[in-house]
Length: 286
Ligand SMILES: [Zn+2]
Ligand SMILES: [Zn+2]
Image 1 (cartoon, rainbow, N blue to C red):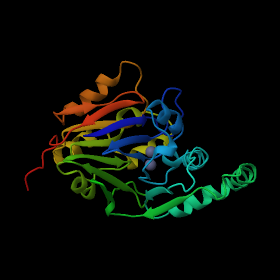
Image 2: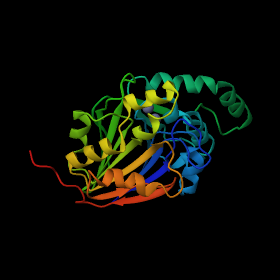
Image 3: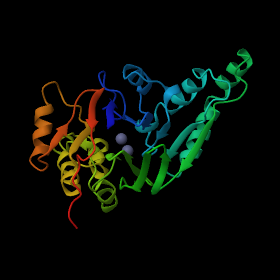
């Protein structure tokens, strides 16, 4: 079984009730944080985990809303790991990730210096290992496998989606993308698809062009549902809502997806949790 927890269902627009984009994946005793938007560590604590318990951080792309709390994840893991030889935080992301991580460590350079000077048992800066990929297998350990594939969020590039597999269960994390063949291939037959969803009908009505621009490179609810249907997934999990659904509005969002995808549809508040069991997805013919 793979457990999916929507840690942050928000977007770049600050919302009092939604943290920034982030999803927690638990599989085979391993804990993967996918993206790290604002407030992620508070939500991670609420989900019963913490930065010092992460197996790896997976980044779909380097948009600010998806990496807003990267520094917090790195520093907090460092100061809350009490074992002498800490396991480096594994960070897997698209090309550019190493540069961002280096810049983040530089930004916290003063902090890192203060803490090393103050604590006798902190003798080295945060241990991190960055791995950059655009596709292929990015993780394989103790029966848990993670694959990546390019997505289409242009002009933001490169961007990647992930597929986590464990003991016959599988979950795809699409990130921000418009429908594309590489995402279809990554998603084929998966148990669940976690997909960003934008209500173009509502966003297009906003009078500000900069807001309307977000429709260019994000899938609508219907497009996410269409990708899920084409791939034969068992569960469509929508997140990263724009605009944020008002109380009581989830049914309206669900209905837009249900017109296209007739299997299980999940959406909800931060900390919404979904269990994905083996054999949930259907590998489509052909
Ligand atoms: Zn984005
Ligand atoms: Zn985003």
